[in-house]
Image 1 (cartoon, rainbow, N blue to C red):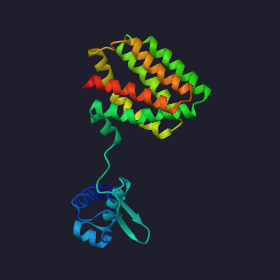
Image 2 (image 1 turned 90 degrees about the vertical axis):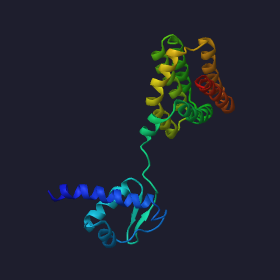
Image 3 (image 1 turned 135 degrees about the vertical axis):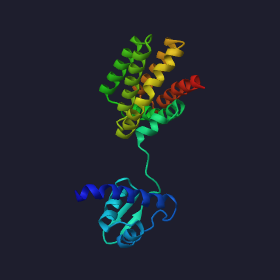
Length: 222
């Protein structure tokens, strides 16, 4: 029962500490007052202060250092990545994809394996079969672009790409239902150009074709 009672107090104490950090009372890298001082200032016990510090440490705002004290390591709590992506404008998502996928395409051209190339060609063929249905086309398109990122053999780029899919998929489906691809042939050729550059192990061309394709999508949104 004691822990149940203390938990809301610790949350409140953490909120108060965070508010003071946000207000600039303590700057980045500064050491906080000791537990006893904070307990008096917040009107809680030292154990509650410790819990509050643990909570903010888990969020990256504070860092306890053994024998040295507690230090400010961030001036606010980082917003959840999924929330940022969900709220972002579709043009912002496309711009981020340009940065990620153009680099991924260049790396894919330098690092791709024969298996990667076979998978790329396979996903491109699947994509070509679904050019007349918005939902199926978007899913096949995402699978193709993910395969390019996979071929880069960079797990961070893949993680970033996967983070965009939940935000991107419904927006792209809606867009294609309103404005279908004007020329499926040209669209396929743009994707094929990326594959051929990867196949030729030409990083500059792979990056250029990837960027041009995504910039064309962005242009249709303006």
